[in-house]
Length: 351
Ligand code: AMP
Ligand code: MG
Image (cartoon, rainbow, N blue to C red; front, side):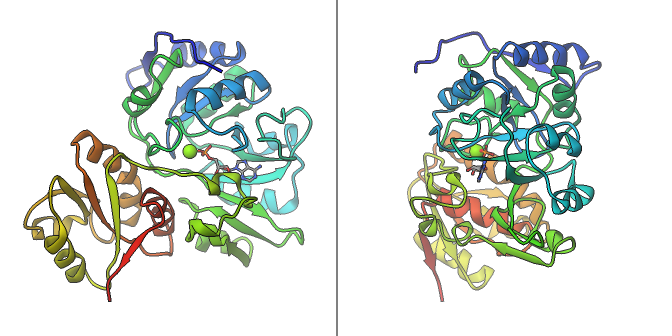
């Protein structure tokens, strides 16, 4: 289906009273239209989760395959009852981590159209902590389906300008809430059949270690660190798709030390190339454009900047971007998962 081009307005939520902007957005949601909205993770492309047609518009605007299901956002953890069959473990996790960047897959109720769930009998449920997102859900009176508001395959948007770049002319309104505080998408988990644990399908700011404080039994899906393991019928359909790719080619380097990484880039970098580096190392590269991830120890900051830096590399028309492979624990696992997909799964391993 083709998208009708329309004028895209941007309403700021940052100066003064935002109730008018939220009311306007709620009107669009109730009318089956789409709105770009801020959340604490990344910007979302929001539509009513009760309307199959809104989901179709979302897939079309993003160019997203329609078997890649949408996350449904609710205003309160208990509102999950309206759309899904909950379990005690859902509430134990919700108690600690909702509202917040955690998405839980649950069996869906009939009010959620199959189009929203990509044909699955489960639905991904999230209660965002961003006040504007929650207010919009409340005022519209609808649960809201909202994938990241980027064109499918591109880095996720962490500012309203990123959303405009990808979706101008395709949606009537973007709410500008400033830069997202977390900057990577929510952690997606499925609960195990025994009811005592879960599996991480997509890592995010609610880390494995944090989940383990609620349920001891936390697994990480193999495809999280190895996209090649997703297979044709992955646990989460999104695992099989290309993701987060800037136009420039990303060279991911698994380096044992900072020295080894710097030396590799200084030896191999040529043409219009850039490098993502921690702030302490930015002056160690002899040529190329150095983009700072933030201070070495601040891994949440690295994750927060990652998508914006990938977009910046394209804005600067870099041809190649060198990135050091992140660690696999804490929030660094989220950066690892995104960057390995941006690099198309290839890693240069230095000994
Ligand atoms: P995004 O909408 O861009 O934040 O991506 C949502 C992610 O959640 C995708 O990777 C989806 O495949 C995944 N997802 C959504 N619904 C389900 C579901 N019912 N079962 C498994 N994974 C899901
Ligand atoms: Mg996405």
